[in-house]
Image 1 (cartoon, protein in one colour):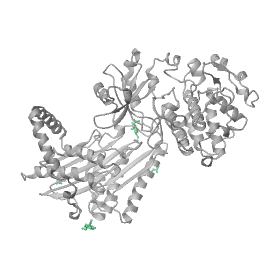
Image 2 (image 1 turned 120 degrees about the vertical axis):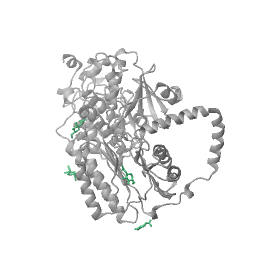
Image 3 (image 1 turned 90 degrees about the vertical axis):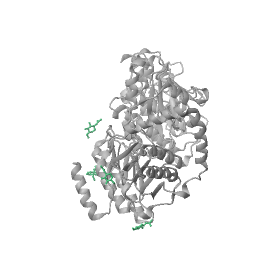
Amino acid sequence: MHRIIVVVVLLWRSRVTADPQTTLLNAGCSQYNASGNAAFVATLNETLADLRSSLSSAAAGTSAASFATAQRPRAADPVYALFQCRAYLSSADCLACLSVAEARIRRCGNANGARVIYDGCVLRYESSTFFDQTTLPGNAGVCNGSAASDAGFSEAAKALVRDLTSATPRVSGFFAAAERDGVFAVAQCVETVNEEGCAQCLTVADANIESCPPDTDGRSVDAGCFMRYSSKSFFPANQTVDLSQFLSSGKSNKKGAIIGGVVGGICGLLLLAIVALLWIKRSRRRQGFRTGDLLGATELQGPLNFHYKDLKAATNNFSEENKLGEGGFGDVYKGTLKNGKTVAVKRLAIAQISRAKADFQSEVKLISNVHHRNLVRLLGCSSKGQDLLLVYEYMANSSLNKFIFGDRQGFLNWKQRFNIIVGMARGLAYLHQEFHVCIIHRDIKSSNILLDDDFQPRIADFGLARLLPEDQSHLSTKFAGTLGYTAPEYAIHGQLSEKVDTYSFGVVVLEIISGRKSNDAQLEPVIQYLLEWAWKLYESGDSIDLVDRSLDPTEYSPEEMKRIVKIALLCTQSTVSARPTMSEVVVLLLSEGDHDRLQPTRPTFIDATSRVRGDGSTSTGSSSTSNATVSASQFSAR
Ligand SMILES: *[C@@H]1O[C@H](CO)[C@@H](O)[C@H](O)[C@H]1NC(C)=O
Ligand SMILES: *[C@@H]1O[C@H](CO)[C@@H](O)[C@H](O)[C@H]1NC(C)=O
Ligand SMILES: *[C@@H]1O[C@H](CO)[C@@H](O)[C@H](O)[C@H]1NC(C)=O
Ligand SMILES: *[C@@H]1O[C@H](CO)[C@@H](O)[C@H](O)[C@H]1NC(C)=O
């Protein structure tokens, strides 16, 4: 298979283009498959076609065609793709490299992420965005065998690579090529990182490639950058830039030397030890030409095991200032890891439960395998110290409740709110039906919906209820389920099904529409809860009165709003089997039209003391759908 492709490429190359430089440096497929096979391939095809067309149109214009991203974030299996050519390639070579990369990446079948890196270009796609990634575990140097005969080559190569490391982040387009003392070298960052990220990535790349000399060829691959040197020219001579204008003056070097002298006297031994360790590590890494799953694409990593003391340091010893919130499962702290990455660290409050610890590792492994753009990613854990700690990606925009009835009430417009509703539904549909284990969240509420930089929802805390002993989870609303959001059959009888999440989802949708808390009884003249109020308005045909006053009425149509209220009420029906599954909810949300054949039936109302009120206790007895009313006794009969 491999041989055939190479032959085809060579023939084609000699005829059509100069040299697309398709020596393979690194490739990998995600171990997870996208859920919808044919639909996913179609989405991938479209995304790759987008990359090609934006490169072609750039090539037709004046700008150089060397970088493109494309995405299909709204697809059932989202695809985010990035392609970059080395900037010295001609447009024709660049497109040729894309063709080769595309053919190679398709070997990953319906894997939900993949990457392939050549000398000439890099192509990668994932199921969530990665465009700002700089350096990832798996970054590596790729050295090739033949040693240079020239004694000065090693020093010259290292010096040039070092200068490119400093200069390239300051060059517009993050690309620089240079030739000096018989060494040819380039450095390049993806254009979607910032200067600081580029510098960070190239510093790692520099360290990786430094072990290559005296080899005549060295490359360094990583998520956000690329570096290469060679004893032979591999780019057109007119591509080189004068690096001196981008290098800082000798001042800092001098300062470095002074500090080095002082520090060197004190901890020379320590430094020696570190250098020795690095050397051992590098020479181990120097296994010549390697391809394979090295780059640690997001989908390729399992959960990381963190050291307790590192997390303690990252969160400033779990200080109050670092506390982001308190949840049913424990407090959450903002942490800054040594590599500068910001994370959220959850300290689980259930360590006492003996079962929890025994299952912790396997559950964490399961949860960390859940990848969906509407679910908060679990990055790793620590279970060695006195606490069980979970490390999550950090969401800058905090949680949904702050935006619908907290400090920033009224901030979100209708389009953003609708996107949040759809995203939540997609995340839950994934947990229930698409992931290979059905995960029931059990505690969906607006404070568990986090918002990313784009105000896309990310569901937090899923899978944690699985750490609780089976038969106890429903007994404490503190652990699983929160008053006002919990389906009555679960709150009262512990009957668990994925429709428990459908119910809570419906309640959150009503909160998003109304800007009211589900468990706040102080609504309007009579004491009633949100769900009850919403039902009454729906029955009287006035559901539009539910809408948050802070929403601009020109942003939504009354029909659309009524349709969404109706979907929310379908989700909160008393009869469990009458509630739609979450994937049905996604379809309902996205299909316009009235859904006339679907008529919600009355919900069961639970008040603050967890008493179930049947149909008799509300003032709206005249419902045409009251035949479907379910009272508490029907639940206990099941
Ligand atoms: C993904 O799909 C391929 C076939 O397309 C199959 O061989 C592989 O086992 C699947 N992987 C998983 C994790 O389901
Ligand atoms: C996707 O593209 C590949 C290669 O061009 C083609 O073989 C395949 O039929 C396409 N699939 C779909 C679903 O469009
Ligand atoms: C190493 O690089 C040189 C120069 O580009 C090339 O001629 C040689 O074939 C390469 N060797 C291997 C093993 O790739
Ligand atoms: C470099 O030279 C090639 C021809 O060898 C030419 O096509 C190209 O436009 C030149 N590029 C620049 C930036 O001058």
